[in-house]
Image (cartoon, rainbow, N blue to C red; front, side, top):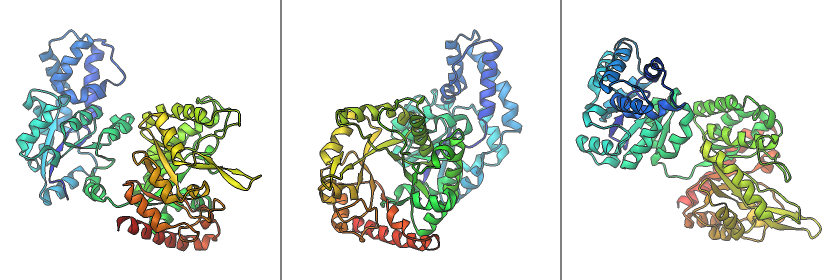
Length: 505
């Protein structure tokens, strides 16, 4: 365990008190008929009772601040004293951390009158070296200096301390102090999960995940992933995930582009379906590292959600984010000869950026090709490093990156290792790994075609590629009957692990 020093928030992180906090604060405003913003709980959570009283003054509440604080205390004290409980797995995880020699501390906006009595009733007060209210520092968690002062009192370098909080504003401010930040899931902040993930070093849905954080963070090895398409077609999503895990893969690339998905996976129940898949991934012990868009959007369709195919695409972005994917591959659109390909697609990708920002997921633009049947050759469609670099640069958004398909590079006149070398390393964040014979888009297992895999992996290493190795070997897997697919996939995983070994070599 790398982290030996922890600084915990209290409400919504250690205890399930946010409903109480919200009801108390809103009750005071409602009793005085004060209008407030829909995101007011997000705003006031880091402020503490005194800071919240000052904020309520700005909203127009005509009451002395001391009286407001007293009223807050009166309304909340009974709940903290008798009823509010610890969140799931909090107590057992704290015990493990303590047994492992961790230094545990609390920094919360709640006053000691609520904080101490609740911790003592739960039997965990004595686990903590320091139990601080923001009142002890005469400021709030919206002040970056409070985290520096806490670190100074703890006596550890600030970047050796892990701060855990369920509130976006607190996490964002804490991050600016230099402290390591772990976002914590709470129902009250569910709408801000992607915002929290965007600023935090870690994010946990269950408190027990703290025990796995260092294993995940310190593991710099390249993760091995496989596109789920063939398995999902044969066995369904849930069984396919289990087969991928049993075969030895670290991750899956979730495919939205087979026919049944648009209605079943991207219909009105898409969020609930994605949450079920995410839970199954967590239960099985495998992650979703990236995804692939549905192939439904075409030239001439409108870039807005009134267009069914565009709606499906935006839902795929949100769904993939729920699954935990960092990137979703979105193909460029084929256009008529008299239409400027680059201009059209820049506008297309830019129309998706607001959804990327909203859901916290990156679009990966892939190098493609166009088959010229008349001349029996493949023409470029973002099929050169210059074109791929150029369109990502012109889109000019941190939410748009590049995915290099190894096999596609070989079809458009490049040795893949040379293609990789010429792609801007700052945008190369994803791969589709497949072999071919330079003649067709085979999507077969590495070493079963003609590509030089030692050279390819060394080129990735030289480019300082930090993403995952995702096998897109659809046509290879398609050849095998259901009975042989699990063992076939195990062999594919062993090939992928060999490539990772070359990279790490």
